[in-house]
Image (cartoon, rainbow, N blue to C red; front, side, top):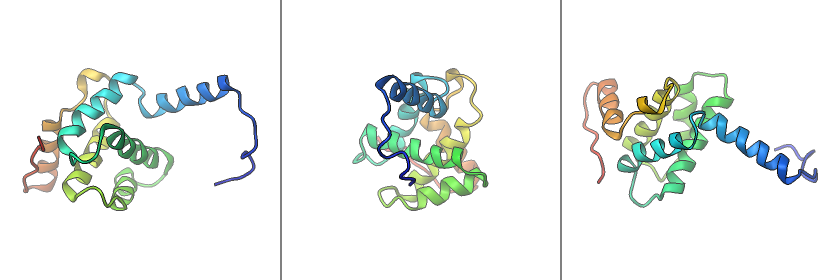
Length: 133
C-alpha cells in the first residue's frame, strides 16, 4: 500500500465521485446488479454469511479479476481459495457468477441461483450442487 497519499485531503465531493466510479466499475448495470448478485448468491452461500459479507466476497473477487492481467479464472480461484469461510461448492458458485457477470449486458440476463448451479454441474461434468435454502 503506497503511503504517499495517506495525508492527502480529499473533499467530500471527490470521495463521492471516486465512490460512484468504483461502484460503476463493479456494478456497471447499477444498483439493480448488486441486488441481482445478492439474489443469485444468497441461496448458494452459507447462511452464516450475511448480505454484506456476500457482497464483500463478490466485490473483492471481482476486483481481483478486474485488476489482474492474468487469466480471470485463475485470479478469482486464487483469491477464493484463501477464503476459509466458504466451502468448495460456494467458491465454485462465486467463481461461476463472476464468469457469467463478465458477459452480461442487461439485468434481464442476470443468472439465477439455479442457472449458476446448472453451469457448475455442466463444467464439472458431475457432482450435485444444492441450493441452500
